[in-house]
Image (cartoon, rainbow, N blue to C red; front, side):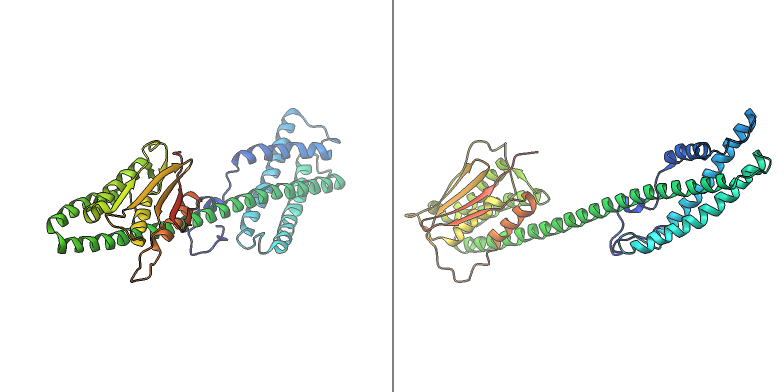
Length: 357
């Protein structure tokens, strides 16, 4: 069996498993009889003898048998040598081993079998020059067929290597994306529980109402945990539910403006807008007299999330996990990036949206 040329820590891919076995039965069924019948005609084995109808049939069968023995033997040698040498690490050794093995197998065996043919069909009157030319032509044909086999092997190994690299890249990206998703729930839960803790002290009745709506918000998180993209309409509805929780606490101090058109024609990574709204609330001062207004509108194939800049003093430095997480998710899911414009008067984040399909 062929040894794997890849890292043993990783199981071979399906093409890699099959690289030592080629389904060449059709190839052999056509070319073995072809070479068995054509080579004797080219080298003139029949030019000096006269055969009956049945002798011609038997002679043809014998020559096809020679082709079969030469082909199958060299095929076995080729497959065996692949266990010891490969083109990428030992090209010269591979070429030398193939040439020696093919020559020392094909030439002597062809010579003996051709002498046998002359004894059976030409009364033992062997023609040395014809035998030499025939054996040499057989060797040339074997080298050509070996080249074809090796080309097929190299193409398969290249495809297998590319497929494996693509699978590893995809697995790495999936693992990174899952790790980023796993950051979202603890991050959101931490902020939500802080809010709930505050409400419990200030207004227990509103805390219970907040708790009920928080359950609806987490239901969205759980339902979309395994999805990379959701309809923009679903994300807008989730943000509305989330903003209702914020309104319980902040009342008239915050406002939200949402787009109303084209919501079913676009996709967006889940929890994108919640992260941006949370970021605006966390980093800005606002009150009922000077409310924080978050505006979200579509600009071609992007959403722009804007709020006025009135930075608040934070007692703890921001970890920046929200925007970093969002930027990384966009890179992995869409191969596009978000754009952050921290203006003097207005803070804007532009996030791409994508068409379904």
